[in-house]
Image (tube, rainbow, N blue to C red; front, side, top):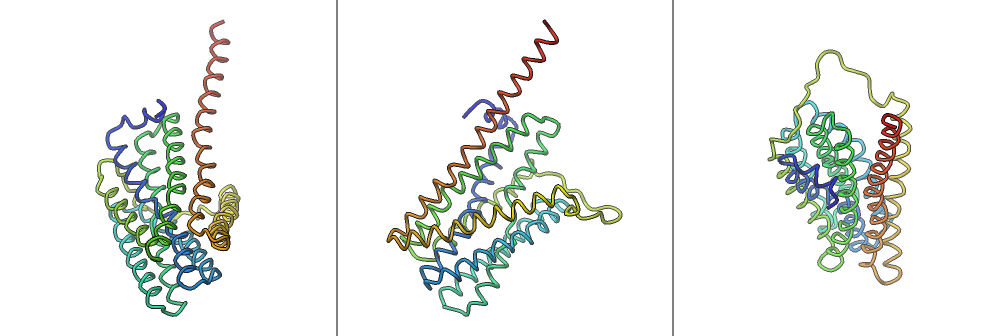
Length: 288
C-alpha cells in the first residue's frame, strides 16, 4: 500500500470500520444488477427488470438523504440498525414474491422499500472526517481511499451477483447482497469508538440544502450519471444473454468499474506531485 494510504490507518479503529464499510457497500453494486439478473432469468422480461432497477435507484435517491439526516441527529447505531432491518425484510419479501410468481405490483412495492438501505459510503466518510478534522491532506487521502473501495465494490459486486444468480439459482445475487448488508451494517455500528457524535436539531428549521445553486447543478449531473449506470447494467446483461454468454456480463461490468477505480489513486498522486511542486516553488522564493 502506498505510504499516504498507510498513514491514514495509523489512527485506532480505522481499519475495522473501513473493512466493515467495504462489506456493507457491496450491495450497492450487487442488489440492482442482482434484481435485473433474477427477473430476466425467471420471467425473461427485461422491461420489468429495468423498471424494478430504476425503482430501487429512485427510492434510494429519495429515502437515502432522509436516513442520513436522521443519522446526523441521532447517531449511526440508533438509525442504521432499524432501517437496515426494514430493508432486509423488504428484500426477503421481494425474493418470496418472485419465487411465488406474485403480481408485478408487489415486486415494485418491496423493491421501493429496499431503497431505505443506508448509504454506507457516507457513514464511513463521516468517520474519516471526524478523525482527521482540520488535517486537510490526510482527509483528502482518506476520501481518495474510499473512492477506490467504492470502485472495488463495483468490480467484484457484479461478478458475484450475476455469477451466483446464473450458476446457482436466480435469487442468489440479491440474497447474498442482503447478507453483505446485514454483516457490514451491524459490524460498523458495533464500532462505537469511531462513531461521529450526533447533532440534534436545535431552534428553527433551516432551509433546504437543495436551494443551493451549486448543489442543484451537482444533483442534475448525478441524475445523468445515474441514468448511464442504470442503462449500462440492463443493456450489458441483455446483450450478453443474446450472445449466449450471460455470465460474462459480470466481467464486462467489472472491467467497466476498473477504469474509474484507477482514477482515484491517479488523482491522489497528481495532487501530491502538485503540492510538492508548489512547495518547492515557495521554498525557492522564500529561501533563495
